[in-house]
Length: 86
Ligand SMILES: [Zn+2]
Image (cartoon, rainbow, N blue to C red; front, side, top):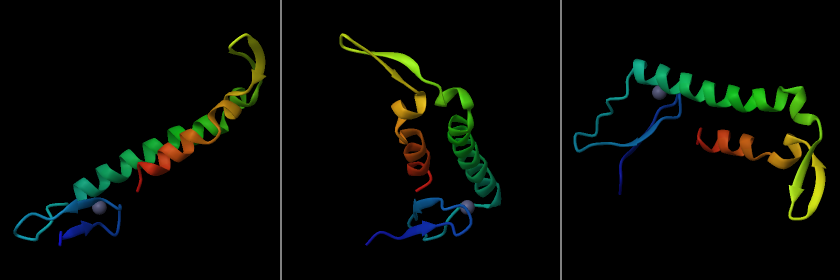
């Protein structure tokens, strides 16, 4: 059975080396949280941006349809941002 370390502060996961000691420290923790914060902020900015709710012409085959970026996204940016935090 693998010995897995999960940081209770930032959620960082690693398989522990043979000595069973993590080398994850406070500096790594801050970097991990900063990177997560950046990813989540970028996703949130997409949903907060008014222009992403305005309809634009989109071409599907021979059809010209009108969709907003939010409709086209259908939550995928949020799901991707959350997946990266798991
Ligand atoms: Zn951590």
